[in-house]
Amino acid sequence: MAESTDVRRDADVEADTVLEARDLTKKFGEVVANDAISLSVKRGEMRSIIGPNGAGKTTFFNLITGVLAPTDGTVHFKGEDVTGVSIEDRAQRGLGRSYQSNELFFDRTAFENVRIAAQTAELGSFSFDVFSRADTMKRDRAEALIERLSLTDERNTKARNLSHGDQRRLGIAISLATDPDLLLLDEPTSGMGPEATDETAELIRTIGDELGISIVLIEHDMSVVMGISDRISVLYNGEHIATGTPEEIRGNEDVQDAYLGGLKEGIE
Ligand SMILES: Nc1ncnc2c1ncn2[C@@H]1O[C@H](COP(=O)(O)OP(=O)(O)OP(=O)(O)O)[C@@H](O)[C@H]1O
Figure 1 (cartoon, rainbow, N blue to C red):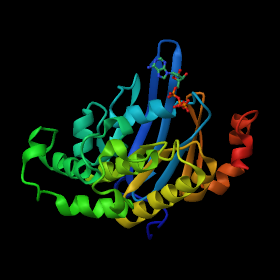
Figure 2: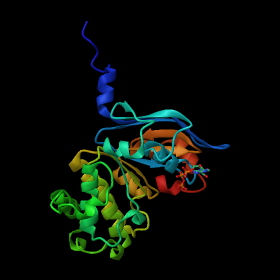
Figure 3: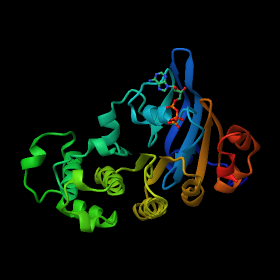
Figure 4: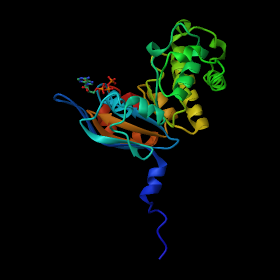
């Protein structure tokens, strides 16, 4: 008898999945910040993580990147259990994260910041050599990312003199310089005005598609979330209460209840 085509082998599922959290739990004393969260992200997918304040989104990111160790559960990246792997090792394996403004080299130009990141990725870890080594290393990649993030006019501007929005975009360029398979972005549009928010969201979506990478972002702006996500995961009180397409999430009663009294209008 022919094998049913909709029964997929584990290996197929694994090949399709870039990230999988299995029963991830993080307790801070009595507070259960993440309560047995299981979810997976496909290759090439754009996923948003939403939830009211204190829902556990940042904790979840920190467990994925390795900033925090889970109380229980495991993290699998590209089919391998990376739960005990260091932050740097995870980055080397292709797990990228967003850079905050305070992590930029403020006295270096936008271009130099990206070039240093690209060079550091190649060397494996940061070394002060990156300032003095042959400038040609990774120049092309850095140049392309500056252009891709619409920072060409700011190429030679020192990071400290960039606008807030440009610093955020530079942070994304730096994240991409490490050539990740999966990029985690924590509120990439925070502090931006409506126009810059829309532009940046659109840019993130386009870049993800162009590079064929997976992107997971924490985002409070519901118009961004609904506009660019393939799927959305909702956390509430440390629990993962739903994952679905923007349409499915809009119509999900548990999600509406979770947002009731606060942000409900955002998801309607
Ligand atoms: N280091 C910590 N020590 C103690 N409690 C913590 C710590 N980090 C987070 N928590 C608690 O864990 C819960 C989840 O916090 P978390 O920051 O992950 O939520 P969040 O969804 O990212 O919130 P926000 O949208 O406000 O950033 C909260 O109750 C928070 O107070």
